Image (cartoon, rainbow over all chains, first blue to last red; front, side):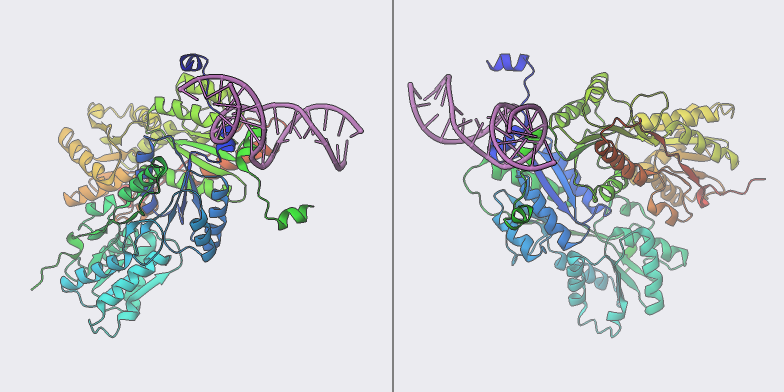
Length: 301
Length: 301
DNA sequence: CTGTTAGCGCCTTCAA
DNA sequence: TTGAAGGCGCTAACAG
């Protein structure tokens, strides 16, 4: 009979199946931005992992707007997804309530905070910011600025870690060296923010950038201005994009496990779906790595 | 009654609706790669446009494999999508048959070829390749190479246009200057391919790159080798990524209407769905623009 | 034009 | 273990 079914070219109807079983094979993914190059790696990991499973991925873009996220969570949940993946730990209370009540696996990705509730796969942005500050300080830089675009909650946590780690550097100007904006991150913006830093605090001798786009823009702008890197000025980026190591000098950055987060998010959902017994909570801190390259490789005496 | 319905928090069931109407509100999108930075701009355009409509977007990644594309077209069509968007004009015959028979709007994007069938929104890659060759020749370069990664059909058309435009340049070595590989494009690969070109044809004085990733990698590698750009060596990229204009010198590139393609693809489907009368075929050539910057701005006598 | 009803195709339960 | 049948909630066709 199965053979006959094969021959006749039978294909199950997804809608009928969904109606009867109250479940689809769509995994919903909610991300704050499509511009952010970060998410393309996460997506790649997800698609690589999903390839071996009968799931489709449907992306919702909430544009860094919590209320849009709330609306999309509701919309996705109504579609009876196989699972839901949301970026970040900072949903509104209403969103959190919906996620808690959802009758499908829900994973939060990108961030890790032991005190937050729910399943999560990510790393601590606070620690990453602190590690960047420490790295630059260890290389002998003393007047370290911060360039940031679109300060989402994770960026703010990096800034908090950065600031806390620099406390005791007794740089009275430290707060002046934090240059942030609400506009989207880009290479051009990195150049712009560096110019602004050098106006507001011209004696700055290093920067930690929100992400590698900004860092690359700042590096290129510094070179246009004849600033010697790393001798006179150190730069540390964040994310370690593929191109960062190709810069001249190479860009020091913080490598983040974006691809792995994507893979694990899907495989966690698949596992939760296959093992009918309630599985253990998934709370994975994947960590990060400071990758030193030329842009901060100053000789320390 | 409608008010009561509101009050009771009624929400329609997507699966039941799909089963009864034989139609969902999902627009399927088939792309060959998630790595390619090109598609993030296309996606952005799509999501920006879709925001005003009740459609969700579901992405299939066929990894440059025609048979995977075929399988995904079948899978998507079975879900009764509101519409289908496929990248490229080069599907297998079976795929083409399925697309022709689909009972939903189908748009091909990224490419434009007047002799191909079906609705399409894109531009001519052949012409783009020819324009790049002409630009470099007009700036006085005479021994122009081509760097290419993952030669998909559109890339090959750019190469064909490039080659045809250089015919008559009477460079007997022209074919030696074409360096291509099957691996995925990246900045590092651009550096690598430039090194290879300079081994195989050391007298080359310019390159047209597959895309800006390669071009940026080649530019940075050339600088590491002390090659003067644009005096001794000209570079033209493709796609005009945001960061290209920030390079030192700025990277000459071919600006492509990626965001616009995304927007138009969605709005075309929405229009086709709303106007019940069969609408006119959509065949839009959006063109491209050669943006000259420092990397090819050599004084011509 | 409004109100009613018969499926849509599968899943799941219940009977054999 | 296998098989039959009732719904899942909506849409569209049809009757009034």
